[in-house]
Image (cartoon, rainbow, N blue to C red; front, side, top):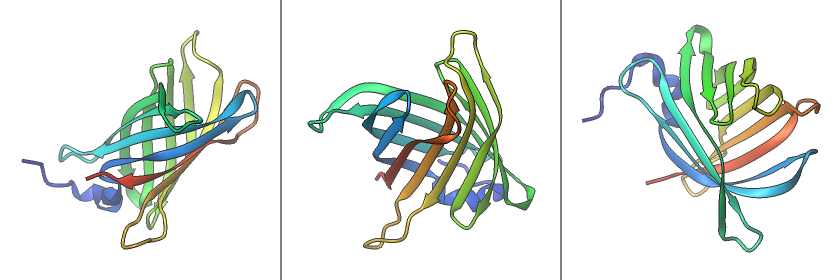
Length: 166
């Protein structure tokens, strides 16, 4: 039996569940690519969402390629439609995002990026998540990730459109 949703999570309720879809990636230091992604937002009755994401390369012929990024973390709503997000990556990077929610759109920017000695240099990030306009009675989740890394300024790195699974 699933626990009741904590009242503080009501503004983020639209995120709950598993989302699957595809996106594109590009950055000055790499070749452009297509990827598949699965994102899950869950809760346990406490005032935070659990978050996990995994992605994989989509080859030019459309077949599934090697695994790409994975990340896990927590989304914590705060008073005044503010949000705190903590994300950990197995590549040695941990990010703390702060931002806000307006309707079904979330804007986040890094407050802290920490990395291990062997992790690639990432200095800042910004993310936007939001429900896209309704089409055939369904609203997909779109998101964009901007990154400053490897001596490059903050710029779009990834974007995807995800459909609610199940």
